[in-house]
Image 1 (spheres, rainbow, N blue to C red):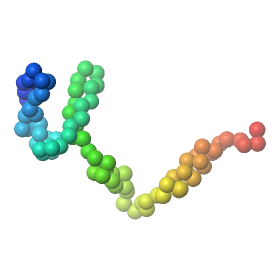
Image 2 (spheres, rainbow, N blue to C red):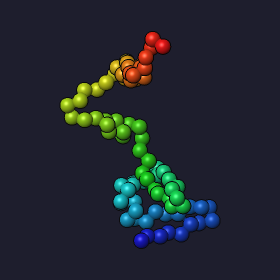
Image 3 (cartoon, one colour):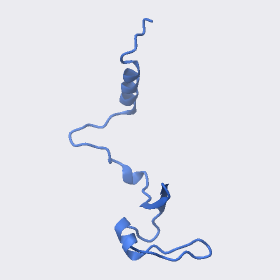
Image 4 (tube, rainbow, N blue to C red):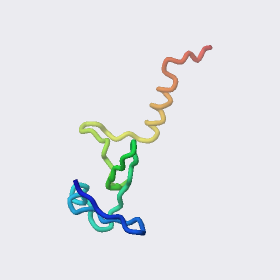
Length: 83
């Protein structure tokens, strides 16, 4: 277990092992999640870093128009429009 001291300004230094585990370097941002009385520290990621995170091999990219069409189709599936 690692610990650090909080200063009067509410600042602390993340222990080296924590920085290594999160892959943090100087200038990186962290996010804090409070869950059931515990705090989790995560490395903040930019939107650019998330590009392609949902891609699957063999699956072609889908345009926004195709997405809108699929949503519209899904919204009307099983709905009797004659009522």
